[in-house]
Amino acid sequence: MNPSEFINKKIKYLKSKFKDITIKYQYKLTTDTHIIKISPLSLYENNIEYLFDEDDFENEFNKLYPFEEILFISEDSLTKI
Image 1 (cartoon, rainbow, N blue to C red):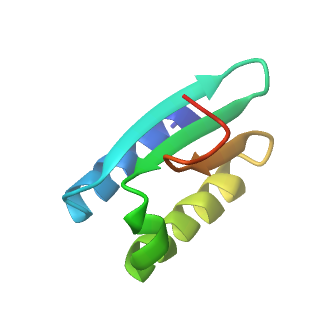
Image 2: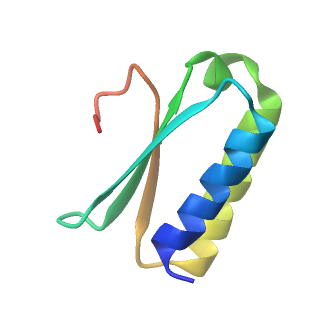
């Protein structure tokens, strides 16, 4: 499974678990970075279950693909998709 397939599988899981979530995904070849935008912002601020899932997602990705980067952003991030 390549990194994009892994990420899309995890995105499907998050969408099934958190009904109000909106997720956008972009891969930037120049920086070899997978960017995942999560909204609404309240998931970051108020949902500990989501934060644990995001942490697990990131840790698993880093173990499987140690030479690639993953970045989670929110609506108010300076990084944009």
